[in-house]
Image 1: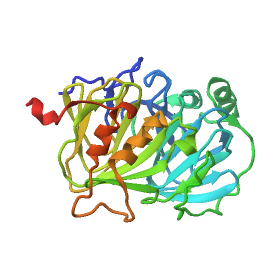
Image 2: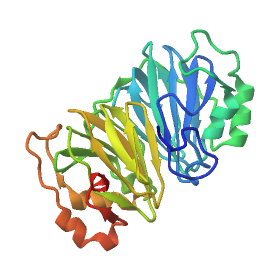
Image 3: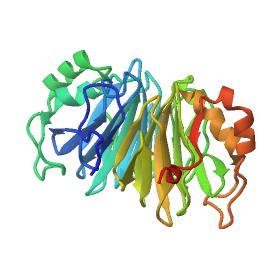
Image 4: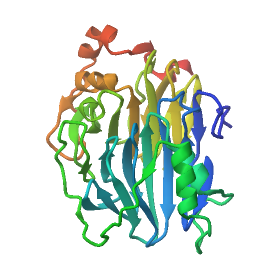
Length: 342
């Protein structure tokens, strides 16, 4: 039984939330589950999952000072992004810099997406527009609490401004986009795309880099086969997050062993000794790392990779380059493998 806190903490610390756990708020036929907020992350980031039924939507709004990274988990989401319309499906990513107008409509009978916001300043919006909710799944009938009055109060408590503009739904195109503009501009990347880096048998897709976030964070989607643990290490200045999307993985954090299943989330703030191992033949995990200055680690350890799935024969793992640049990577290795402790 884990000794990690399994509720949203009231201080910045390492913690574990299982799928569906967190603070839940209902509005209409949607449920927002706050998995990380400004308090639990030390003001570094926030994370909420949004789930709802077909036809549910959210009005046009923007964040003056906050980046938003959206990852679709299930179903279909029609997204208006700076006047353009995209149809997003599971695994697609949308990047929303400060000041970008956006709105969404849920298109499947079962939909969910993760919304990361950097720095923390948006989660109070859900606390204001919604009512505390004891269930995990969205309600079958609309909860009668989502009106203009709630939106006005939300704008006073969170970094959100509603524009009142109308949206022309039904004009979306499939998000078959692979190009990252390399600047802090809005864009969409389809599932499987992104800058690909291979580290041994694990494939990392960099879908948001320092150039897209002015150095505030990077966003990486990683997958790989069943394998061995990476070395135990910690970061003095960087926050790392692990959100299991598919398969199963084992995490070691502060000496404790934790198994993550799809939908589970582990927060790893600076100073947390940690390692992980992929336990199934295909495992996929999403990671937000803040600040973005940890990006050189992936470029030092890995090599550019042209294919879209990890190889049967592992590629190079350039630990020699990592060891030669340890002083510049905020990486402190404390053990060869967490299994060495047993």
